[in-house]
Amino acid sequence: TLKSQSDNYTRARRHVPLQAQLFQAGLKMRSRDFIRNQVIVGLVVGVLAFLIQIPIIFALVFAAAGGYLLPRMWLNRKRKKYQARFLEELPNAVEAIVRGVKSGLPLNDSMRLVAKEAKEPLRSEFSRVIDQQALGKSMQEAVNVLFERIPVPEVNFFIVVISVQQQSGGNLSEALGNLAKVLRNRKAMKLKIKAMSSEAKA
Image 1: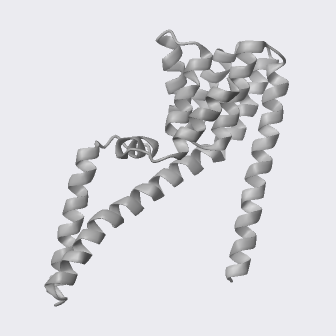
Image 2 (image 1 turned 180 degrees about the vertical axis):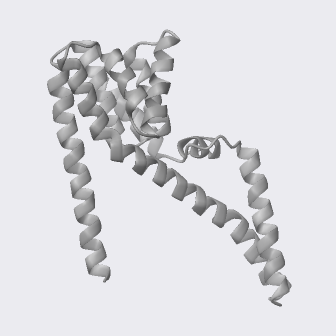
């Protein structure tokens, strides 16, 4: 389980196809629509460059570069914001699952509560997990859909904990409780690094 999840994480860190990037940004746009928008942006940049009397060769270069880079930068920003919003609420969701398990609820019922009560985008992502279970997949298979949309270490940790517990048993509430602490510590460390880097820039 650990090896397969590590392989999944390694693959997710490699070059990601455009359609997968759109999916990970929480967008329902198709790749061909995104490429069409890139062409439109390129044409707009080219026309603006021509209107301000930039030489035609440079205008074409600006058009090509702007058409490719500007939409890509926007997409990367959307992906990062989507992931950040998910990670902001993930520790709370894990702690909610821990409380549900400790109160005697099965894991899937605890996750269903998160899918109903958590903030977006966590609510939608956990709803996808519940939907996968409704289609007949095991919990171990269902939680992997989280990593398709949010390919970050914190989600990988969560999936590993669930997968190991499903295979070998053990105290799930304790394992998830420890995970919640790790997630909060990672979040605090990121905020500290951000504050220190901002101070250095200032």
